[in-house]
Length: 122
Image 1 (cartoon, rainbow, N blue to C red):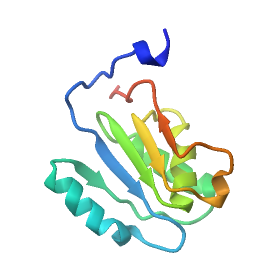
Image 2 (image 1 turned 180 degrees about the horizontal axis):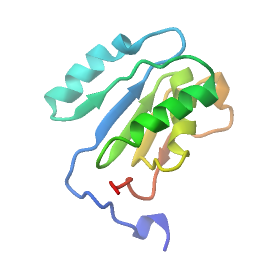
Image 3 (image 1 turned 45 degrees about the vertical axis):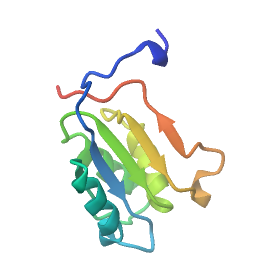
């Protein structure tokens, strides 16, 4: 079965949106985006990115994602894009989508990655 044949387990459920900031910002940089998304009925989380290196920050983000029930959409800016790219590929996470603004750390990697199916709660 290819990814176009798979159906999400949570049809009709809005994803939880997780926004990860870059290296020269903090979570408050997402405030305007968060407000607009919440007005549309989305649950939005903008965790503080610990900025301890891509591997450590990705593990931290993957840990956060593993605690979210239902579909997840990741968004990252600059360095945050590298973090979500790695966190999204770390088991047990499997977000529906990960989107990021380009970063020099992501040379050759696509900026939007569709996932086969959202992670479901165990």
